Length: 276
Ligand SMILES: NC(=O)c1ccc[n+]([C@@H]2O[C@H](COP(=O)([O-])OP(=O)(O)OC[C@H]3O[C@@H](n4cnc5c(N)ncnc54)[C@H](O)[C@@H]3O)[C@@H](O)[C@H]2O)c1
Image 1: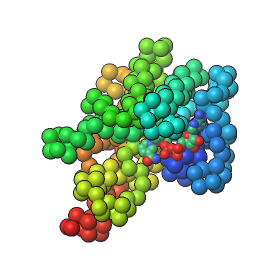
Image 2: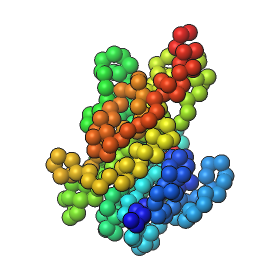
Image 3: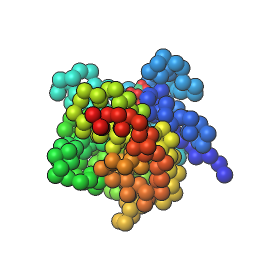
Image 4: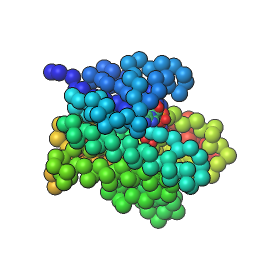
């Protein structure tokens, strides 16, 4: 069977670096980024220099031609910490996401899988840690408490619009709310309130689980919901004993079966830190 033709945006970024080993084995890849070296200054093989924000519509259409699935992991970092810079910077990310959706729709791309973040609903961590809420589900109304999360919530509602068919064709859209895609160094939490460490354990996703989540989001043939709309938001966490972000819909729709659990992965650190 022919390999799926997958385009990865932000191909020299951190998340792409975790995905590429699996993607290179499975897909006929097109890699694009506005830089060709990763954060460590190493060239990433096969990356085409392309700026999704400044490219003309014609050039954009050209690179989307013949693609089956776009994985959008490009991210523009806002210029400063003040609210106006954050807002202006994140609006650029929404513009970039919209260009990806619209060009994918125009060029016959079947599906867009985007890297999102739990920050789209970050505020819910407050009632959770106050003992006033047990679980956060992807269907809970998004409640961001920062501009970064607000922009991701905007990716999601815009994605539904493109998926529901009102623009002529249903573009399949999956948004993956990744939480903690890195190994957790307990030393960084030794002097912090304990719930800060627990939160990381709850949100951990191992590299192989992240790869599985993206690959199943790309490959699962049928993702229509009960109303026939091919749109989903999945939390990106491993099978963590302490998690409070629900992945029941990812298990059901794409058969996500995470293999790792932060409780086991970091057992020695947990025993040391939590008994203090
Ligand atoms: N890293 C994390 O811990 C984490 C956690 C949750 C979610 N995410 C999400 O995953 C996505 C990727 O994050 P990351 O950590 O890999 O970021 P990153 O900064 O490491 O990578 C983003 C890449 O996008 C590229 N880019 C920026 N503007 C571009 C443009 N106009 N055209 C083309 N490429 C452009 C950058 O050059 C960079 O290589 C983001 O949306 C982020 O919110 C990341």
